[in-house]
Length: 514
Image 1 (cartoon, rainbow, N blue to C red):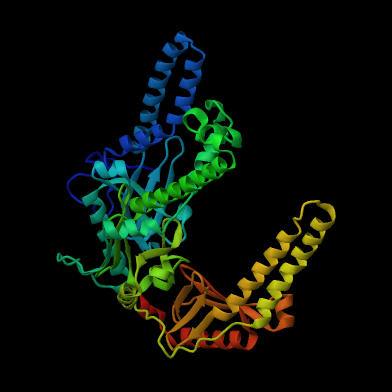
Image 2 (tube, one colour):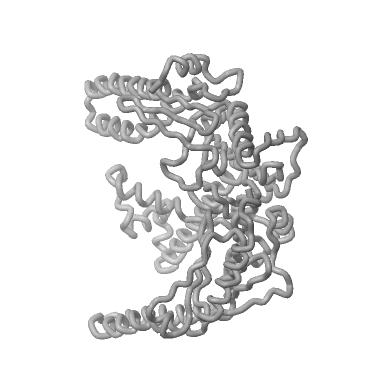
């Protein structure tokens, strides 16, 4: 229901004064134009293929008939966007944020301040050109429980974020929230162009190959050759006069090498472009509200991670980057980050750069005297045995029913699994100190998870029928913003860890964490 007071509040638009409690407002007046262009972008490919089909039939009358249809579709598209903008209002209340939307059927949604975990700002390319930002109120649950305002002026988004945080803090603490200091906040971590491009070299990706292959499969009628025919590619790679094919086997080897080099270059360029678009001008600052992270070239995101909402830390690296000392620091928070629970606090950093950030979150890296312990050997042996029960009969079946020597492939897979499980048993460790629980997994690309004992929500021991007979269990640790598990623990060790964590949780007054 939209009352007279709401209409009075919305006609003024969003310029000038910040929203006051109880006033229903519309988003920025340019929002409908951005939405119209975005919706139009989804129609470019269908309209393009339709135009191509008409032109291919060489019917001039059809082309003349096609132009008015395109104009009508564009006009209808912007009309829908404008009507949706007119019917969308938001209200900053004393206890919640309320949104009403819908053309034919109206829907109203309200999220209390106490459920809002974070308010993030995101600027895609077109809104950024127009000085607009998307404001997202994150509840930690995702889906329809979250509210998104597309789009507000940049200053309006900043004011609204501070207003919501101030009201939320006033409710939890009982006193007005301190204003943000005007001085420039200290930078904990930053990546300039050189660091971002170096990062991109380690983000090798052939995802674009899969996309191009899928598009070619769907629209192969536009090509004058079969892309899945190797001889056609040989002909294309042969060059003028077919000189490469004339070399015989040597030419085929050269063509194969050229194809591999082309794929490697494509994967390298793809990794560089994706990384630059996502991580450009990465900055992590320490503000009085928490850790503020800003990044992105075309789409600029601005997220603040409150320190008291940091549930755990994850530090990882890759097979190649670990040789150069590069690691990634992720923060497990109640709010989500691009659909995941881990916020990238330092996606490409040395450990000496990660250590100060870890201290700012209230955590600490493992000490030198940490009591690292292995998991159960029976757990690793059982995993190999279970794999053998499937792969060995498969190898026998291939040897009996298939003429080609494919039987060796399942056995090689079993050998690889055996080696992996042996390495995991040798290198996977866990430790417990008075404040934190650690889980370290992997050797080629090791990962370290750090959880605060008092911030864990639950501790569960899971045992299947084989685990019960063999004397081991998996320890599942519940986090408000994610999950953490320590697999294959001896049952006595799992029970000891559970008792220790539960004792820490029981001694802590959680109201002090607000």
